[in-house]
View 1: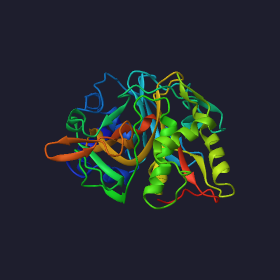
View 2 (view 1 turned 30 degrees about the horizontal axis):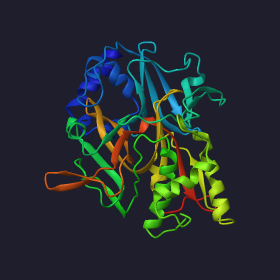
View 3 (view 1 turned 135 degrees about the vertical axis):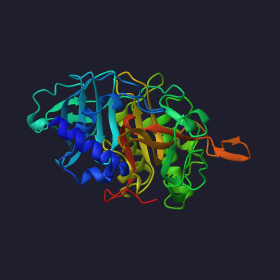
Amino acid sequence: MKSLLVLIICGLSLGGIQNGLISLKGNKNIEIADLISGNMSEYNKAEPGGKPATKFERISKKLEVLDFKRKNIGEILIFDDNKGFIFYSNDYFIIKESYENGLPFDYRNIEDDKVIYDNNSFMNLSFDVLFSSKIEASGNNPSGYHFYSHTNSTFTSSKERIMLTEWDYQYNTLTSTSSCEYADKITWSTYQGDSAHCCQLALANLLWTYKVNGIIDLTNNASSASELELQFTQYLLYDDSFGTWELSVPNVNQYFNTHYPNSGYHIDFINVANGISDNLESAPLIGYYNDGTINGNGHFVLVTGKGKSLFQKILGIKFWTSWDIVNTWYDQSSSIIIGEISYPAHKYWIDNQYINVGYALKNINDETIVL
């Protein structure tokens, strides 16, 4: 059977497979795990700016991944009895991966080799939590933590970064915009630095974005986003040395209850475990990014766009890294001059796998207010 599979693969590599995933999706007899298993040496190669070099010998397990409604969303390939793994979606975006550590839960007796992934948690088919990477608190953010400036030529030149969506029409970028759709809105940015007030500033930037675009003004007569963020601190569980507790973010709704009673406006949790694309269709959102450890560094930002880059190509199959585009560290007016072009300094890219939770501004009907 292995030899037959190799013959099929060779035939495809000469023809239909060169067109990528579309050719494979129509053939249920061929699976990605089989393709990789038959070409481990190819898979182990490093991809410049993407996948590191590895020394795996085989795929020892494959898990089907479902969402909370038991809809298939992707699969996990486990290498060499859990020395590493890769978790990718049906459209071949990398959701999570590790080439140094395996899955953080016992997968050997999983029913039907299926797991549920929701809200950054892995569960079995009975919804018992196997592992949750949901972090309950945010730490201060050191400059540069997993965030890459779009004006950083090292980042942009290491491989092609393709921008897909962006709310801000003023965004000049060193990356490819050939596939991008702009929403022609202004997204606001207030200097965050390494401030433990990053959550309050992200909330202020979200409300200020709605205001400057003429959608709705919920800024309570504040003269600036910096002034507005000071009004939020009293409602949140906050510590100068540690930052804002993530789960206290909905407490800011006391601000709306106080200044806009009976309006129904509120900040609400949104599930971003499987990406932010659906949420981003309505408006920018607040994202909390963390490295996945309890005491890890974290950062709240205003998320305004999406991008992608090639993670690895195997026999014509493209695996993508999904990037979120965010406003952080610099004021709206801050810019960097490269050549003769002025680039907004506050735009950064971060790998989507680091987003831990999201929040959006909603109305009395619990609908995200469309920007």
